[in-house]
Length: 581
View 1 (cartoon, rainbow, N blue to C red):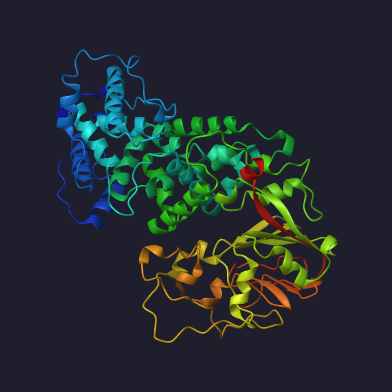
View 2: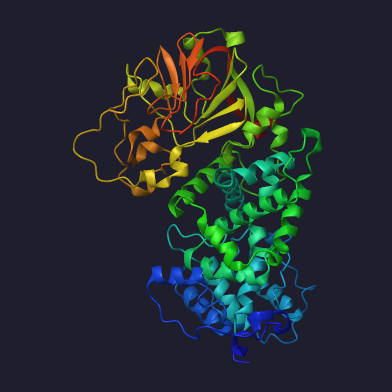
C-alpha cells in the first residue's frame, strides 16, 4: 500500500472510501491564502500520504519555544516501543479530565501507543494542568505519523507554540473554562435559535456548553474530524468554534424536524447531562446525514468576529474567572440556581422570565445572581435617586413595565457614573455588549447592529490632530444624525486596545450612530440612538418613548411608541460565589 509509511497504525478495513487514495499526490503551495483555500476545499483529503506530508509541513512551520522536545528525545526516553506495558498499566494523566482515546480507525494496539505518547508528553510538559483534547489530537496525528516518535514531536510542537496571539491547544483549566464561556457567548450571538432551545430544555446551559470541544475532538467521526484538522492546522483555534457552532445549528434543526420545537415548562427541563448526551449522540451519528463538506460549509457561513476579537473576548472571560478565584477545576455552580425562585422577587418579571434574560447576558457574569438596586415602588420616581442607587455598579439590567402591561428593558454594560464625563452634555457611552429587549407582548432581544453586520466596524485609523467632536444628545429623546460620538485616542500600545465588541470608544465606526449605547443627565436617560431611541425615560421616571434606533436596529419595544411607566427596576450582578464565602 502506497500510504504504508504513514499508515502503520491504521486499520484500513475501517477506512471505507478513504482507504483508496485519489486526487493530487503532491502539494507545492507556499502562499498562506492559497493554502487556506485548499484546506477548506479538502484538496489533500482523499490522499492519505499527501495529507500526512502536508501535516508534517504545517506543524514544522509552527513557531515554538527554543527547547521543544523532538522525536529523538522520545526515542531516548522510551527506547524501542516493542514489549512496552499495556495501556492499563500506563493510565492517562489526570489533566485529560477523564477523556478517553477515540479509536479513529486505528488498530487496537495503537490506543496503547497513544497512552504511551501522552505519558511521555506529561513528563516533558509539567506545566500542563488541564488538557481534555489531548487524547483526541494525539490519536488523530498518530493516524498520519510514520512512527510514535514522530507523533510525539508533532504534538510537542502544538503544545510549545509561542507565536503571539496564536492559540492551538488549551493546557490549563483557566484557558479551557474561559473557552467554554466564550463558546457560550458566541452561541448566544450567532446561534440564537439553537441557544434558545438549550436554554429551554437544559437545567444548566453552562454545563451543556462545557462539552463543546469534545463534540469536535472526540465525538465527530474520523472522516469529519480529519477535515476539521485540515483547516485547524492552517487557521488555528477559531475553526473549532466555527465547527462546534455549526454542530449546534444542525442539532437544533434535527430537534425541530423531530417535532421537539415546543418548549418544556420550567419543571419539565431535562437534566443537563441528558442534553449533553443527546448532543454527543447526534454528533457521533452525524455521518449518516451530513457530509464533512456540508459541515465545513455551514461552519464557514457563520460570520464570526475576527480572531483578534475572539481572543480579546476570551481574555475578558479569563480575567473574570481569575477575579472569582476560579483557576483550577472545581465543582461547577449551576447557573440556573443563581436565580432561586424561592428568594427572587420582582414586580416586573417572573423568575422564569428573569432566567430567560440571564441566558442572554455575557458568560462572565453567569456565576452572578441578581441584586435589586433600584425600584420606583420603593425609592420613588426620582432620577436623582435612580443615579444614587445604581452608580458604582457595572453592568446593570433595566426593567420596565408600562401601564399597558408591556415589559421591556436593557442590559447596560457600563456604570451610569460614566455619564459625568460628558459634563453638562448628554453624551453617549457604553460598549457593544449592551442590548435591548422586550418580554411582552412577545419575547425578543436586539443586540448591537455591528454584531450582525461586522463590516460596520473598522480598525482604528490614524486620527487627525483635532479631537473628534462629542455627541450631544437632544433633550427631547430624538437623536440627531449630524453629531458624532466621543472617540478616545488610541492607546500607544496596540495590545492594550479593546475590541469594538467590548469597547467602541477604541474604534472608529463607519457610522457614529451605530454606537450610541446609553446616555443620561438630570432630565432623562436614553438607551440606543441614531434616527430615534430604543428607550427614552423622562426625569420623573414616569413617561417614556420607544422607537427604532440605528444602534440596535430594533422595532419599538412596546405596543405604543409613547407610554407611561407603571414600574421601573434596576438590577445589579452580585458575585454568587463571593456571597457564599
